[in-house]
Image 1 (cartoon, rainbow, N blue to C red):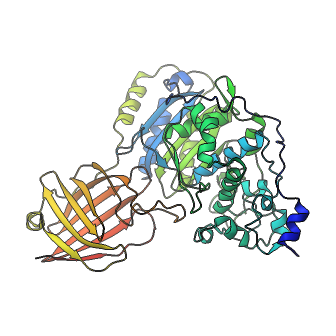
Image 2 (cartoon, helix red, strand yellow):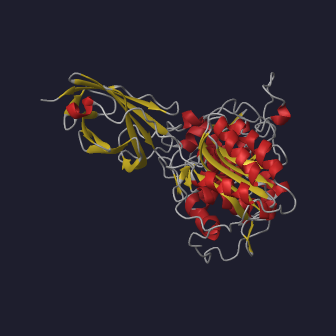
Image 3 (cartoon, rainbow, N blue to C red):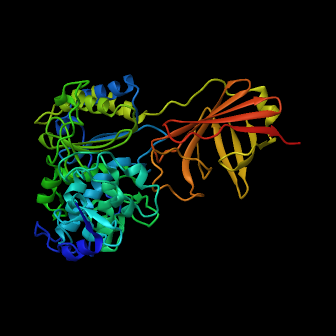
Length: 528
């Protein structure tokens, strides 16, 4: 059964409820003071009841399994007991969160509920009267905010990758069929999270990143987060947040403390409870690869948080962006990475970090602490090395190659080699794109080269010409093949760029570390 849009809106009465069901309005929101980047207090593992040997075993297991971690932080009893960044990643840099962003969007909804701007039982259609289809189905009419939050819209499959092809994502979302009753079927759905972001912006007149600033980011001392936006200027919600590692740890600690930060109740404890407890079961596999009880993606879904083993819960994002909250241990574990097996990452938390946490402080272990500190201070991603020079470098240095017509719009490329580095300069019809590259060492820079950096989803993609930070290193695979590694260190990803020289020709191939859109092999011929 469907209802005409005009009739339906008249029946609905237009607009959302205005009373928050927690009866809590944060005091002095406008007066919240930026924290100037305050850090969490630091301590030693043993002083907080964590065995340094357990942390070392965790790091060893990650390395043996070839997980590419970029950072991690362990917080126990409110104090950081271990932290590390794999160079070229570092504490001061943001990192793309992918779906870890969802938990922040849920938090924005929580603040809006606390301020009486909406309730989770409000009908989603009430916020977007101009974007509805001509006929509103019963299931669409019944869709509530809580169904968006719990990934229980009623879709048969995730519409996100189709929704982001449109200019108006809300309208595209409403046009997608809802064959199941809302609240009855779990389907992971980033577009649903986007709708939560759009609702908060509709109610407050602010993007959720601006709305969260005085309520969350400033009180916690989180500086410089960014969030991608849709074509209409709404934060993407389900992805697109970039934030520092310690910002994740503070966020997890806030939830561990039931929304309290120092002497202020920022977020109602009732909302924290509501947002992090079981709401819906994910579909159980007919032939599980492991027992369901040991699968962290089958422990239930909350409001943009996942339940986990050992009474924990977490926010997580593609490739291993994690904020794991462990109430029973009074601990938070944070990771950023480019991992192909996120369950394995969690397994090592349960296998090594969980048993390393004891109820009482442990005796000092100077030897283990010294080993841990040495390990943490020397963390680094491998720089590919083969041979640092080639006779071809001398032959092509300073020369330009005309590039055949290609989808990236690049017209020429030149190479400038020196002993410890090179500059590879691509040109299109408008500008040059020089990339400075160390020889078997990292060199920091930035680029707006078309096609960079690799990404998982097109929605919210920065505008052409946006510069992205990177480090670059190159080595000669043989006399005629120069291979560069470009790491975009505010994302999880990298490119391997192989330049093969053959007489007066060059072929340049881009291989991304993820399965993003494949770029053309550039074919160049020596000019002059």
